Image (cartoon, rainbow, N blue to C red; front, side, top):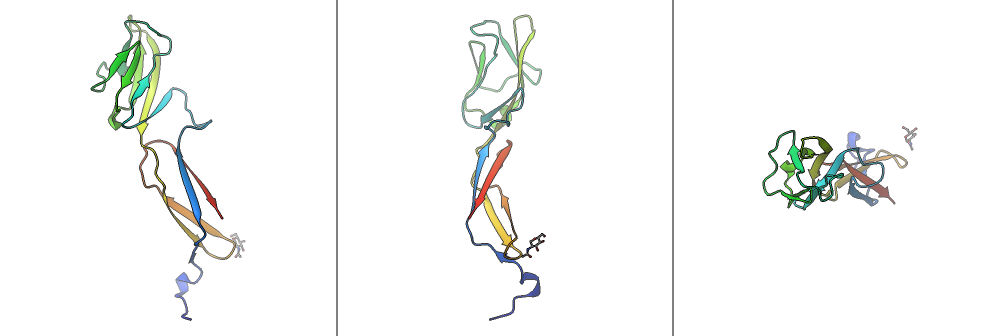
Length: 148
Ligand SMILES: *[C@@H]1O[C@H](CO)[C@@H](O)[C@H](O)[C@H]1NC(C)=O
């Protein structure tokens, strides 16, 4: 058998399966106050909590009245059909007098994919794994790893 090169002698790629799953922020403890997460390409609804059926509700984005193209106002709610990534931002709804009713920070992104995982064992007890995401989600993303 050949002698491994010194630098690689103790490095061994761990072939045991490392299973990694990923999830987008949805679980408990992940919600930030006033932040709403949405998926790019899906219909996103921003609700103006205290104004059911109220007329005269006005939405603003980043303080201005310019809203994403194609948006729809329905019963005081703001619909963003097939939201684009660039539609994220600081939204606020106001009553007829301009008074702030609710502000929402909308963060849009993509579902995570299975990351590619590399594991190395320096000896028979210790190993380390690292991963590279396959998708830039633009959202807080948690990767859960198990091994056997
Ligand atoms: C594994 O790493 C720990 C901490 O660095 C070290 O104390 C231990 O000796 C290592 N195990 C082996 C088998 O070398």
